[in-house]
Image 1 (tube, rainbow, N blue to C red):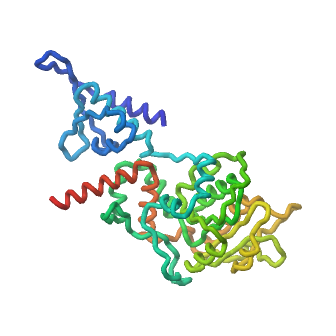
Image 2: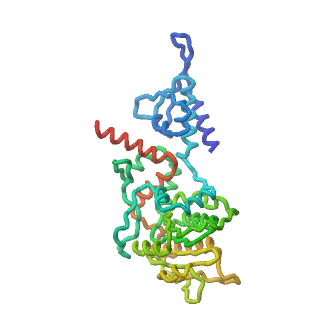
Image 3: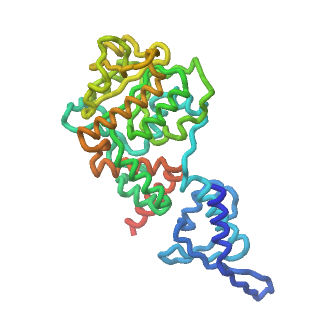
Amino acid sequence: MCACKTLVRMSICSFESKIRTSAAGTLSFSVPIYLPCFPPLKALRCVPSLRRSGLFRCKQVATKSSNHTVSGAGGFLSVVAAAADYIDEGLCDESEGLPMDALEKLLTTNKEEMSRFMKMERKRETSPHKRGSSNWFPYLNVYKVGETILTSGDVLEALSPYIMETRKERLRVAVQNRTYSVCLVIEGLNDVGNASAIFRSADALGFQSVHVISFDCSKRFRENRNVSVGAEKWLDIELWDSTKECFDALKSRGYCIAATHVETKAVSVYEVDWSGPTAIVVGNETRGISKEALELADIIFSIPMKGMVESFNVSVASALIMHHALCDRTSRLGCHGDLTPLQQQILLAEFSLRHSNNAVSIVHEHSKRKVHASKL
């Protein structure tokens, strides 16, 4: 990041400046700057540190291009600061993991608080989703800015100039390989390190939906800080107070509940058909799956063990199961990601809104300009 900021400063400082003498005898200079990769100066006002600094004294030339004339040393330094802060405050953000305390707070918050992390409007579960009719997808093609309704296309149009091309391509590839057809359910974990490792595996393998039932923070382990490296930012994490509440919701969405358990009657993970809507349930580090979960599950399966130990660590088991499900789906269906083009566009808009702290304010500003233009 420091290298990016240095490059910005060097690039801007390399432009030719013109020194002029005013009638009053004072010296001033102007620097014609063309910034194709940076936002209009008006949008740079959204950068919090720049707005707070009071340095914004730049004058924008009224042209359709991003051509700016900066008068005076203060104005010139303003553009340098603006461009550096533009990068520094996340518009070309490479996510870092949440501190473990923040991740723990995320997992122990209520559903309403968790829902604010999801930006696009979500479907209301008013009626059961028929199994086999279509794959469950939670989002509507709607983003609300006050009373104004934007589509995913509007969101992408607003944010496109502010996201680097390499980052856009990475987001597109991630969305193409995402699925909601198989989701993960974590029941009663108490190790934040295990939870964050599971999130990382889910993101890496393209499983978008993760459900957490009654996360228990009475026991805390601090050895594996920042294991998730920001994976929770890109997942849809739903919190549930009870196993029954979660399973009822999943079944209403058309999912088959497949619970992991070490017992003689359990089928092998290799015998399960992962091509249909399936919820993988993993349990507590020591107790495993609860009795209630076993009674409500449609399928009970296990990973065959070839050594002396009876089971894997829960985060390792989750990764192995998800990887096998991915391979099985690819073998049966030809691919793992199964979102329609419209669903991909909606999820790409969702990811773009999560991409940086400034994304939402930029879309709101875009919406205001659009409404103003329509009234002219």
